[in-house]
Length: 163
Image 1 (cartoon, rainbow, N blue to C red):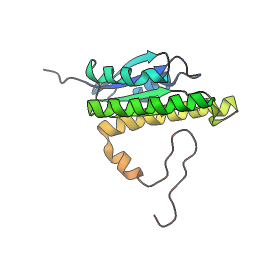
Image 2 (cartoon, rainbow, N blue to C red):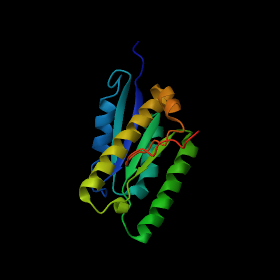
Image 3 (cartoon, rainbow, N blue to C red):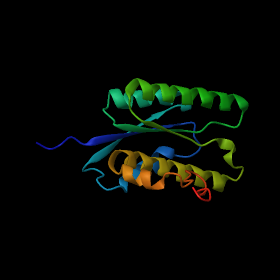
Image 4 (cartoon, rainbow, N blue to C red):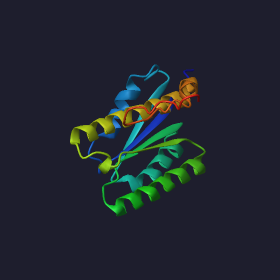
């Protein structure tokens, strides 16, 4: 009998100005074992406040072992507040399911340059998708990067001297 594939969930939003889910799925498709050892289950919701329930459903209903939850808070102060509340919901969903949910937010005001912002969306989406893969299949990849100032979205910061 064939072993059941591990499922990685990707939930994104319609509100984001970039197709974060497509970038994450493309990155996961480049990982070893795609379609043999694991499959990707996707869901799209209206906005980032809907991510927690969708991620929880991907875990409980669809059997995902990890979820990447992606969205874009806007520039207004209320958007920052709502992003914080959405992040709390994602944390609660993790605790309720004992399953990692990687929160991937790109704030609209991270850059005024549309090309830079698109690069941040692409980079952050792909790097967090890869992190999800590593968490499940190659945790030593994360261990080897500990303390190295690795960032998702912009250039890495690098480690502090003598660390």
